[in-house]
Length: 292
Image (cartoon, rainbow, N blue to C red; front, side):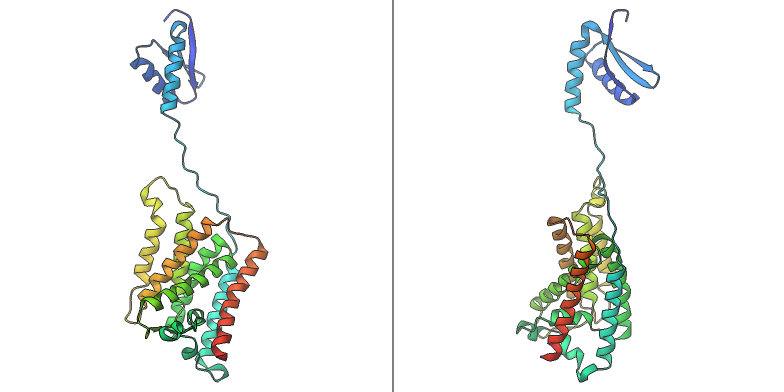
């Protein structure tokens, strides 16, 4: 190639230059690739430079560069205040219920009772979340509640996370009551525990916080959440599977809604207000339950 040469493409990527050389070869346009100190240059005769440039432009338009999916940056929050409040409230009410403080039968006053809830005693949707039938029941919900609450609090902040968990768990209890017979009765924080799990799965999936380049990664949070639900929430003769499943579903919906109407406020004032609101729901519900 002895005639005047023109540069039609240059890149530090040998493969990019080779791909375009292949395009020119398929069109029988004479070309030459040289390595200029790490920069690969594609040359063609001056007489063919216009045609080569046009064909390479068409190639670029038909083959836009593939951009790697970006992973959103996660600004982790402090989960400790919410975890301490969860442990304190659940243990405090368990102790008062166990010793019948104020002369009340806390279990009868606060449990999920399908007939009474259908008749308007909606506070039971919240009070039942803090009652437990045995020390083993209590410890199990404390361990799993702290575990899932830790991750929820890191993603959303203590206040927003636990307000979402409490509201989602109450909705889970409500759906369970209206889907089952009116005689249904239950207690336990497990609905809230699985609401926390669902909240994590819904928020991570809808927020695309995992790489989205493969189907297994796209649906990983959902599959993982359901797997944990099956593993930890469906065993035992006294297990309220409906409450666990509906707690997970309502938590999942809450996680997606937080993304839909986000961004989630992360300032300390908002976290404090939402955390106090979550605690107030439990406190007011118990006040009504014991007074009525």
